[in-house]
Image (cartoon, rainbow, N blue to C red; front, side, top):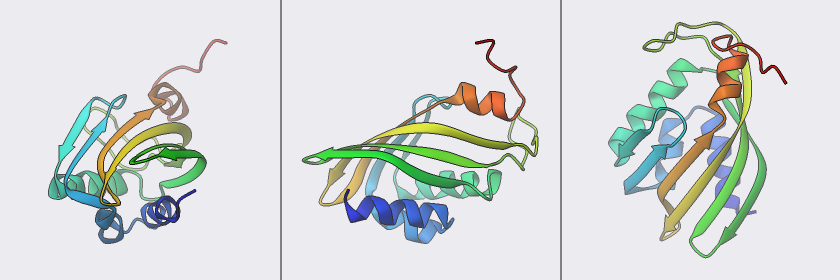
Length: 137
């Protein structure tokens, strides 16, 4: 696996926005496909999104589980875990731990992330924090 992905996960898990941002191009297009369809364009919007995420989940961590790349494209799977400790619009803090899978599709330009599409298991997240009932299966 590329050192850049290990370094990105380490910077993110350390909650260091200023170390995370250099991994992205200035014109980054970032989308959270399964998490309400959030779209972010450019580093300043990305900075605000990441800062909000770190505020909402102050102990969030990523654990890499799978990675492959081909040319300027990458596919990453990681486990996102933390504690839901801060109220969000329409979602009061529950204080419960979560751990769920996310898949990220990345396009790079000149070694930096130009586009990132994140697909996450929101149902598991919502069940773990107690917003949805456990799966009957």
